[in-house]
Length: 344
Ligand code: PHE
Image (cartoon, rainbow, N blue to C red; front, top):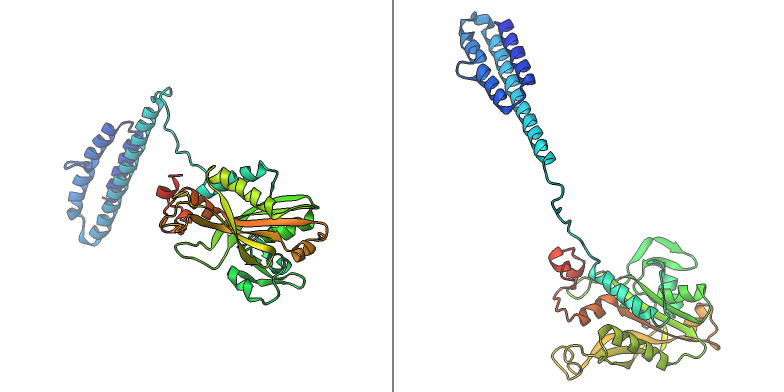
């Protein structure tokens, strides 16, 4: 009986091996596993086997059955794939292909490129400085006294692992103004710098993401005045927002500029008439001022001979303002949600 079963198995496997079509596989299946198939009949005979051997023979019969079934299934799969590859060969290669979806730059990257082009057209050079920086460049050299409460306004992420004897703790740049010091220490005037970089602050809510971008200008030369600062910012605002948009400067305070200003622009919604968004026709854009003499000194520049102006604004802020995007949650910009990003 055992020999008979093994014989059936071998016969079935060689048929399966040679089968070249799904029909012949079906035929083989019927021949061995069908109602009157060779294996089916053999299994019926198991009851004639002496009782002490019956269980072992039964197990063998089961194994044979499973082996044949598995071989049939995998051969079928095999034949199906082959017949498909045959179809592929027949495809008309002159048909137009499927177009792959094409992505585009992130909206903030687009804005950064635009801002760069505007300042480039009036002689500013885009630079890149560390975004993991020392305290000295971000605060101390910018005229913040040690332990002064004004430092808290920048909600800085400090990196506890590193501390420099000379430059203090390590941090993630909370503003791009550290670039002013880096720029002055590595270049002689005249300087016209545009520093666009990632900035980090401990803030996360509908209006803030812990990582955002700023663009910082710094100009240093012999005869710079507030007029040059205002003219430069006005040129940017007109290019970016449109010819009807004006700027105004209001006195403010920063440690690193004197005098310091907040810059407002004509409200882009009501064009200065006054509306719900702006109240009196102006929208707040960001900080600016004439570089403080101590800051020039810390940058290795003689404040008796040179003057500078600087400004630092948020990329996300200017972009959302121009597009009049009523985004009720700024975090959407960095959420990687395609439904949102594909619109830009
Ligand atoms: N660094 C300031 C801020 O983050 C902005 C600023 C830059 C102000 C340059 C004056 C001059 O708020």
